[in-house]
Length: 129
Length: 129
DNA sequence: GACTTATTGATAATGGATTATTATTATCAG
DNA sequence: CTGATAATAATAATCCATTATCAATAAGTC
Image 1 (cartoon, rainbow over the protein chains, first blue to last red):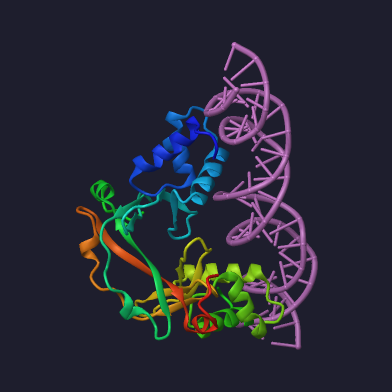
Image 2 (image 1 turned 135 degrees about the vertical axis):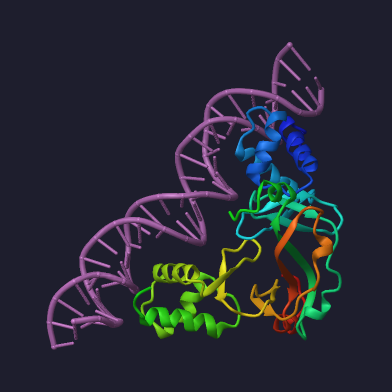
């Protein structure tokens, strides 16, 4: 991470612009226009470097490979559409989860993922995938 | 799924006995004593058949490959210990999540995963992994 | 502009999970 | 008990995400 390259700028910009966590493949697509010829290896390398530098955080959704989003965002959760598979960031939090924690366990973090249909897919018709 | 074999009985029994979702590897270990020589391929085949038959449900935890648990359990969530990596089933539910759903989206399902230390690991000492 | 070398792109290699193959075994109807 | 065949064990093959390799390129310093 000693040089400020076109590719890195494009990748960081893509992540910030997205407003939702992106997987490596999605990052490649989103950053490609700003970095012609961008290769998937560079995406992986850069994501790893950014992760190591604490500039992005990993987001894990069902069996999918990890997605990433810029670090420093407010606490939030996700909504995944079963039609288009997009993962949306949602504001808010269920609130106090301590009541769910078994006796003797220590709660440090939590994750909430909602599943359903996004607004766009809902309009296209509620047909099951 | 036309025959009732020793292997299938062992796998189903292991899943029911576990009380927590098991991955293929864990199923193999748990069922092996009751089905000597059980192969991993049989575990995969059987899990797929059981899943297709609706007798088990998949459970997804962070980047891990899917785990399975018997179908028909009450709605519940999970607690994953960052020390021992075990996934525990927990009773209860945060309650009404509708307020989190963006306008126009349709909520169909949700998932809550708590992270922290289980009782056993907590006693062993709170040292970070 | 020239030079040093970090970074990149293309692609081969790797690793791990899952699936296919196939000879063998075991279930169960008759 | 016997035969037809579903199911299994072992292992090779496949998939796919990620990483390593390496010659070519470009960032940044002088």
